[in-house]
Amino acid sequence: QVQLVESGGGVVQPGGSLRLSCVVSVGSFEAFAMSWYSQAPGKERELVARISSDGTREYADAVQGRFTISRDDGKSTVNLQMDNLKPEDTGVYYCRLGFDTPYWGQGTQVTVSS
Image (cartoon, rainbow, N blue to C red; front, side, top):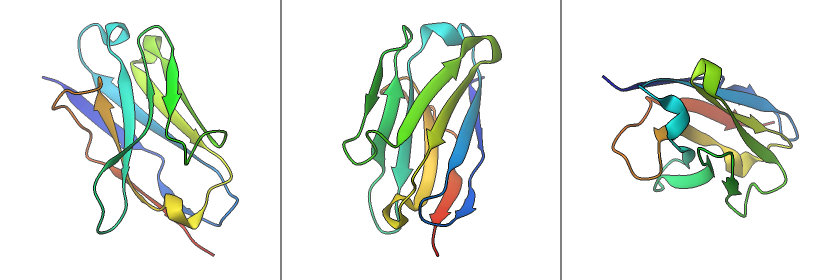
């Protein structure tokens, strides 16, 4: 059974940082790409960053240079380091197995507010 569990969300002031983690229970985690999405109130879920099985990274334009996605295959974990956070980064953040699978985590809330 595939399971994804996110952690690390919280409330932070503009300019602050948070680190999200997603632990994945799946066979051969190292063979899968991983993605992070965010969903702001009243909006659709959007891709934030993704990382391929070979470590290739891609970012949404809005977070380029501020967010860093990484993976630890030994721990079946994908992380999202978020720096210089802005109020518009507020939302629920979800990790997803691969780029287009139906497997998602439950989400973790990130609130950026002064």
